[in-house]
Length: 132
Image (cartoon, rainbow, N blue to C red; front, side, top):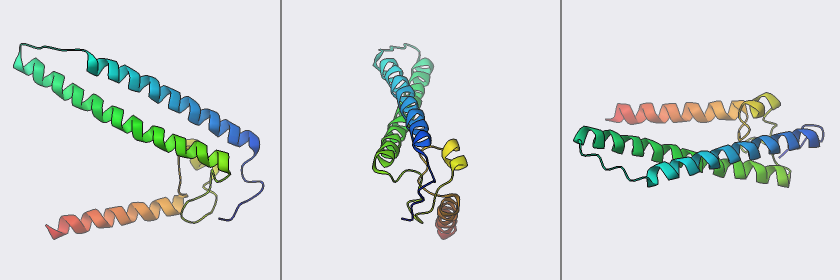
């Protein structure tokens, strides 16, 4: 990995660490709220209300799972800050770029590598659809 001494300053790294920690705290708070909602017992005599309740619970579970995955990515980004690899593309070793990190602080790929992965995913989906 090609490291640039002046790529990310200590102040920038601390800024991103703060953003990541705040994001994680928000997700944990939301996750706790979802857990409390799911633990509430809802006995609905009406089958339609019961079905709506089940659909809402399924949605909340998907939301909680998404938060769990994001928290894992946030923890990985914080670890990269700690070990000095934050902000570098996992595929090319090139800097990800401040604008991209500002937009997505958990980014692990530079734009070129991300676009390559997205193209491969689209091609794979199209191949799978065409094979049916």
